[in-house]
Amino acid sequence: MKFERNTLLLLAALAAAFPLLVQDQYLLHIGVMVLIYAVLASSLNLTVGYIGEFSLGHTAFLGLGAYAAALLSSDFGWPLWATIPMAGLIAAIAGALIGAITLRLQGPYFVIITLAFAEVLRIIANNWVAVTNGPMGVAGIAQPHFMAGLAALDIKRSYYYLALLIAMLALYLIYRFVYSSQGRAAVTVRENRYVAQSVGIWPFAYAMKAFVLGAFLAGLAGGFYAHYITFVGTDVFQFSFMVSMIIMVLLGGKGTLVGPVIGALVVTLLNEYLREAQELRMSIFGLIVMAVVLFLPRGLMGFLTQRREQRSRAATAKTTQAQQEKTV
Image 1 (tube, one colour):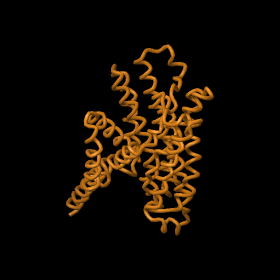
Image 2 (image 1 turned 90 degrees about the horizontal axis):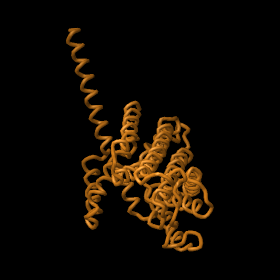
Image 3 (image 1 turned 135 degrees about the vertical axis):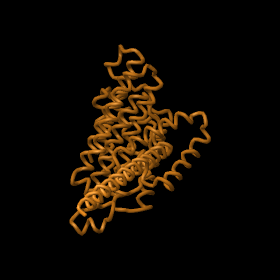
């Protein structure tokens, strides 16, 4: 608990200092995308890492949040400070509705239904031309008023700090949930559903709380993404987003708070580095997933935690042995 909290505080301090040390808009853009993906990966981790169900439809909540913010801004003139929370709320309501169906299922049935839900939303967004503008998407999403007179570099910095604020809020909410009695109950359900029921834990209720929180945070990220890119199309429902989030969670370490953040940083940087090798990029990511599953099944943070525990046990054993020798 203390290790993850201190690591998150250190990462937050480094992230806050990053724009002050950088004068390049491209690097700031990468920083913004890392923060967006950190929120998305952390929200997915609530389902994969703490409930123990593998969702392939998390892009549904990202897309709902993005379209909600885009339409509220372009059609109704809502400001950013109102559209992003509303995007999260709409995604959370959708999460409650789909969770009421899917969380009663397990294994491949859960995977198939969540994937189908995201695909249905993509088809609706692509064909409901009167509302979503179909394949043309929603363009011209207004920037916040306070950015009107700023230089391009300052606008990037402003978006960066907004993304950092959302990421810090998301990680704080996840931290409070995970280390609460409800989060521990969700982990108990993940480990053994029947044991959880035997001690009075209702698996569906606790899984629903984690699932809805994950949907809410993905909606927030989608709402911010719409304002940052100033365009939303059906590509937000594409499976490539889902693949990136899964790789981030698995690489960083599912069931940890810091893991998805580290995974988001590594995968986003790797994605930018391999941009020229578009045809090989997904193949390389596939090889990374295979390597992680085979050699680091608990991810980078799981591996580091295991090493730290081993060193702690070794130090304790040496201390105990030394005390026994003194006693003899």
